[in-house]
Length: 65
Image (cartoon, rainbow, N blue to C red; front, side, top):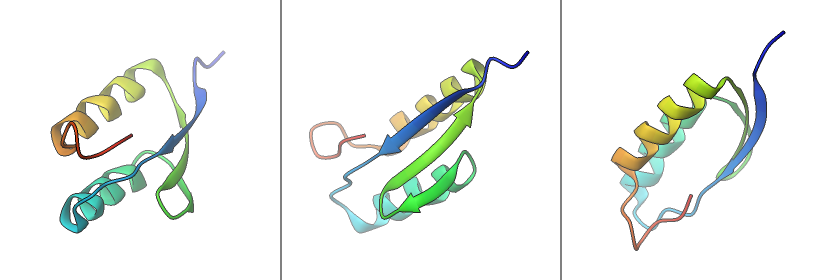
């Protein structure tokens, strides 16, 4: 039995370069639904990896995930 969970990730990134980087990272983890919205089916481990990668890219106070 799989521990994968369906997760919807939405984001609002102020800087175009950061937005593109986040978009590219998200493509490796889920299916693009529409602008700045991804559907991901992730195990707890993959979800942790994604959260870590997003924290490295997102600028606190300016961006929202």
